[in-house]
Length: 297
Image 1: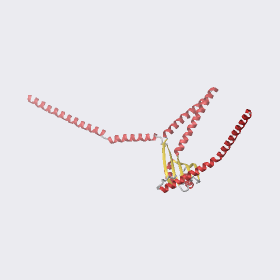
Image 2 (image 1 turned 135 degrees about the vertical axis):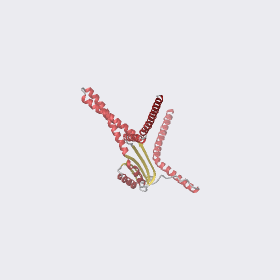
Image 3 (image 1 turned 90 degrees about the horizontal axis):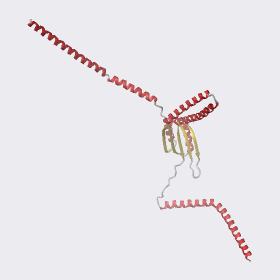
Image 4 (image 1 turned 120 degrees about the vertical axis):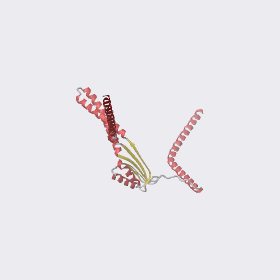
């Protein structure tokens, strides 16, 4: 019996150990499968990143959509040299009109003594065509100088727009109050305030229109001269220096003669007046001496 009991106890112990080992293997297998399941859940980092990147891209696009268009005022100036400034000015005007622009101002002067022929233009060109128009203008004559500047007025436009909206709201509110006014005093006060607000609103609307025009049409100032400014040439030897000196002496004498011709009539008038004054003084002196002499006698 003891022996059979020992055998049964041994078999039970073996079965118990086998069950524990199987349970441990099962738990280990489950743990490894669990960690494998976690791996795939976290592994699709590309998917997660794609979602984040997509969201970031959408947010950036939305932010760009909310940003206002940049408002830029462009101005430029050109100095050109040409044999016939008037003809070049005509070509410049035709070129600008072809580009969709127009002429704001034009002045011309023909060649005369001491003055060269010249033409000055103020041109308005669509902002999108400024660069191409300037390049075309540069081909019409010899370029002496070119300058272009741009000013960002986006903030100014936003400020004007906000003030226009606020004033328009105020005007509408005042109109509503006027329609409900029950006495003359309130009506007069409301009309006075409305007049002031409406004037401010009209001023802002005109300011916005002016800025819009400057943004849409750039201003180009074009000056066309027949010859460049004369440069001073230094004498290179004694004879050239003598010639320049003689020329300066002649010019100085000519200037002095011109000044004398201008002043001579005035000198004659002043001399005649001085002579009359002297004669009057002398006559008065003689008369006084005669009276004194007769009184003494």
